[in-house]
Image (tube, rainbow, N blue to C red; front, side, top):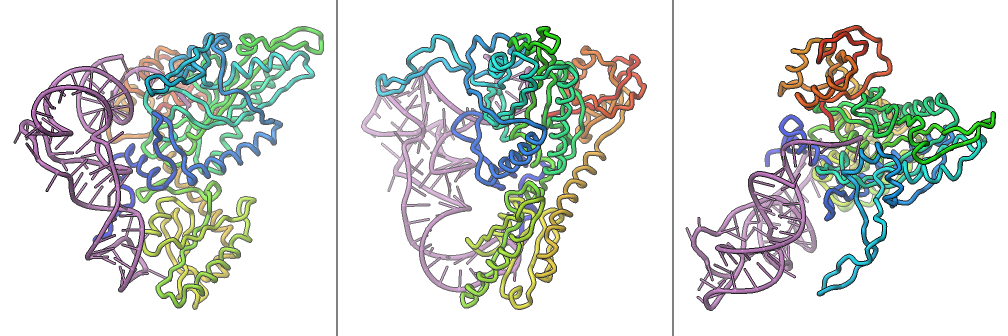
Length: 496
RNA sequence: CGGGGCGUAGCGCAGUCUGGCAGCGCGCUUGCUUUGGGAGCAAGAUGUCGGAGGUUCAAAUCCUCUCGCCCCGACCA
């Protein structure tokens, strides 16, 4: 039987969206559920989320954020307080109207109509704001720095596993401050945490910046974001941090008495990152053989595959494999014990391929040869390298190898991204770039700052301003759309 | 909400036009042989043909109603 060229069909080249679905399926991460637009996250996928949670949560706590929990339901009346905010979400709200099921003609039907409908939270600014209003009365009560890990529901028209599902898992942080500057700088602090975790742990390079008015969170004064480039050149918003000014404080009536005895509205922020990060992880690193997981975020770093050809040696080999597991687990990587799995469920190539598709960083095959020569047959997922190595040398060096893999995966992604960012200053070239089938990536182009130009480009090309980068050098130029003098260059791209 | 398509075994599908035993591939189970990058042979198990009603000796197939899902648009972390 001829060996297939790639484990994943179609390839990225052939059909990127289908490739993405296949990687998730073959990698055993998640699948569609009986509920429209909602996914079942399988253990291998959920373990990725658990690691993301662990990393982010620790970083939030370092800056004084505490976890809390608020209800999944929001009374309609509360929702109405923030006019602009709710308008942004109204179209995607799930609404609960009944509280009971009754059997009628053998069928369960909703019964017990609620006097006031409940909204399933699409985000929790309003209900958390309600509590904040109660909790804040003096400047001594501030700041309040809260976060909750939860699920939310946004009834999207079209869904894709991890990238956009009707229900998804995330964290939402909500903070209240005395001053504008403190709130603004906290918004930045959180954005930097997102950027650090995503780059250092998930190995996804990101661009930090602020959103244009059209892309801003409904009701926010400023939305800061991190944007990543996927392997099809599209942008993925990987995390957002909003400076809400006093808008929500006014809506929810969050007031405090200052040191001078004056009554003032507080300044609030909110910020979130979701299971979408897993989608970004997949689309940044994986190849035509499936998932590639950076070691720092991998559920397990190593899988041991006993090669048993002869039953007479089975126990001997297994004992050896178990002792190697212990040896490797005694080593640390990224401040944690290295995690090792033994897969002895079956033999042969199918087992090897399964782990390739699951993206485990290191595979080690151990058979009688390895036992006798005191070697290991090691396969690396990041570069496809496979070779026989001395056991001691490898085990003692494994942390460094994982570290090198982490860096390698990041630098590959960084190179890909940088190779696909183009500075384009001319309107014609800009249009040609985004209309062309075989060109992909971001452009860095001058923009005059008007919503009209932003809208026109979106209508003409389905291209949006991903962000106004912070490290902008205020290049002079002529707006890519209207030709007027502009002070900034911004990133344009098609996006998820 | 507009335009298109599909519901048949766990998954992917054929069969529907022209009514006549419920099928194929993959997967799964068992056994033997294999085994260092996707194994082979043999024997099995698995169905409310989306649902309801109708026509007929006979319905996956024809008719009526209904439910659900997918794709393309508008909307979006």
